[in-house]
Image (cartoon, rainbow, N blue to C red; front, side, top):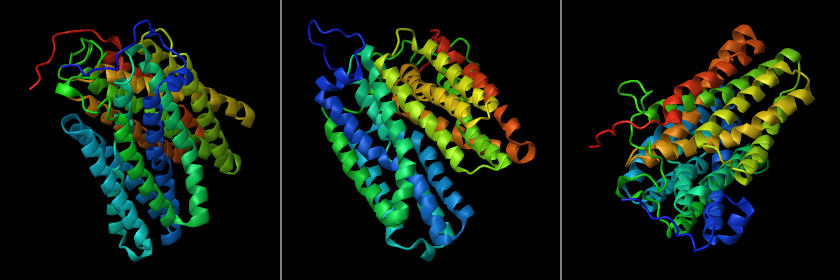
Length: 424
């Protein structure tokens, strides 16, 4: 059974329209995006807040990094499992339970000075904190997907990608200022309140559309390749699996770039502030690029646009490697950012199109894992290469990662139909 989509009034065009016009006429869409945005603000705050707070309490930079990493690992590991629950249970119940558990872990971290905890307990609690983050991004995309006709999906996905970019751009700065001004405990408590209130309000706003994919089918308008095996996929490997691996490789350059810029600053005797400026330029480019993607989603197939923005992203980062001057490097990072947010939006749009029956939320969860794992793996790999060979050797990793990611994504991008898999 195909889930219903908001009917289009007679005479109303289903062609893409500007985000502002779409938001102006649709109150429910505004509420969905507003509450989802507020509930996801802790995503941009929590990792750095934990890092700074644990460092201040324990005096160990290394332990602070391990605690922050544990929260990220928990988030990545739980995403597919939470997606499985969301595919099979009522989403408000699942989101509510995870939000309550997440808030409880944050309050527990805030209630007791971290210095009073054994280190293994702090690590375990950080892991639980990450693992219980409610999957609001996946649910937001599903609610948006079911709220608009197919021609406007790229627009609403682009709007959501811009809002998420704002969370990750402004969140760390807000975390640093808040921890410095108020300490870790008020910040953690504020994150708990935002998560619970935002999640409850989001579920209420999404109620008219529903958040469960009825009958195990993908959302309306899904790709004809859903539940199919692509001709180009190796035996036993689905197009979805290939695409998730491709997403992982496409996320590698994010971590690689951070390590490369940090190493280049060390080699040049510059302050780490220069790295922050360049990453901020990329974030600003992401907001602008995502906004343009929403305004002009394009008429080509998502597969073609996906390849184009991935290539543009790789070109921008590679140009930064060749341009050592601060202004030129900033322009290159801005250009890379212009493609970064559209790349994220189109990645999840492709997952929307190729997800098999009964696994739409799981596919979205695996996409989140791919982004997190790729970023972390890129940072770790680049750190080792930088220590041994220097910054110039790290930048060389970017182009091969982009190329390999696109090659691995080929089965999903080609989207050929073959005999459907037997489900169950």
